[in-house]
Length: 374
Image (cartoon, rainbow, N blue to C red; front, side):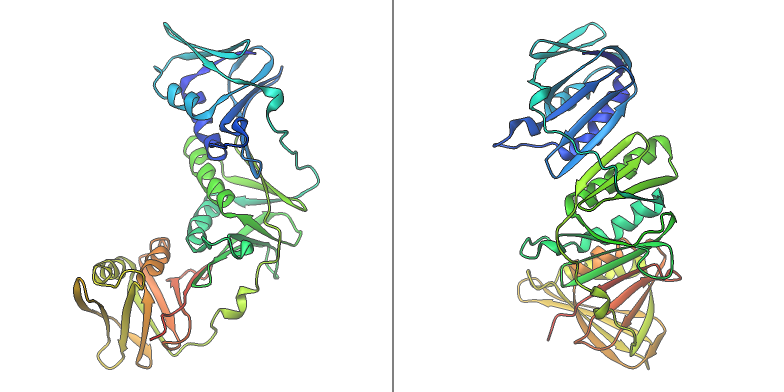
């Protein structure tokens, strides 16, 4: 195996595949990346058995072959090279790297010990705008459950064309908050409802951001199989297992009627919540919102026996009746930081029911927070 490429292309490829490689005591080979070269292309591949990332490396191919080397060692070393052409060549059990006047050898493991990467061929394809997909994932992933007691909640629900519209509905919940985002599907008519693992969802978002910064690809292709999902974007392919199970029907907890509604400046609300969070009891993280329709003001308060008390008011038009609710400031900030609009619409029923935050003028996203019972 022998090839030549630019340091920039090699470093970028290693950054893209790094998300699927890591330390594994039982299978050390999973800490390596596979460099695979045939007559037509060169690929760099990583996997953790649940997730695989494959990238086509732009290069000049001189000899075919394949070899694996530790991902972290190779990535760290390449980042230190000068911006010149890099030559990679396998010599017995080592990868020889030449760049400028330097020459380095990295010990590796034969490629035949590397796991076989599955090829998803029988799936159904969907085309979505990459920018919308990336933004949507960023808006829902904060609500993914970090607890493995209910595996189906430790991922994002992807619902393709579940209603009358051609759209992908992404949802995540940890039982304390729920995030839902809808984006248009430009190609693909099938109906599917799958659960994408947490790690995979974050890797998809990372790949969309990294590749878009280089190539500005407009659309991403999603392939859905019986137990796998594949993403094709630019010169990157991601293949992942899906979470086995049924996602709960979260639509039942989305409130339809409200008693109080108001609109905040998103920036001002975030600032007030951050200030109030300094005076909350650790673990409870409780902030109180009191709505006074007559005065057109929302009083935000918090108290801690250790740090003190906080109280502030936001003047705004309030529709409906007086109300009060106690909310977790960490959950609030996770949602508000991803709204992406100047103003936030806040709807609530009472202090015992879930409340909804939406970006003003955008019905495609909602963020629900369960109240802290007084």
